[in-house]
Length: 80
Image 1 (cartoon, rainbow, N blue to C red):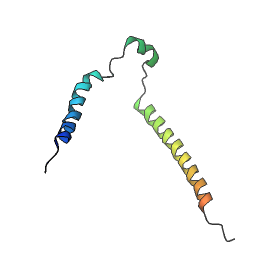
Image 2: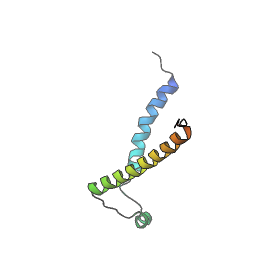
Image 3: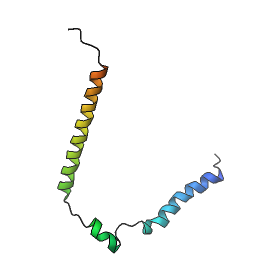
């Protein structure tokens, strides 16, 4: 199977860009002027998990409410 030269260049460009941008895109060191804005936040794994579950519940209830409204609008009239 023959791969065009442009495709080969694209395939090689992605890992090259990742290698070159790796050290530059490191978020471990923030400039001093951003330290005051960002600050440091330490949360335990349990706190993060609890917040994730609460957000999931909120999102799912919103989804259920939207689905309920859609089914009310599209359901057949009852024969009673």
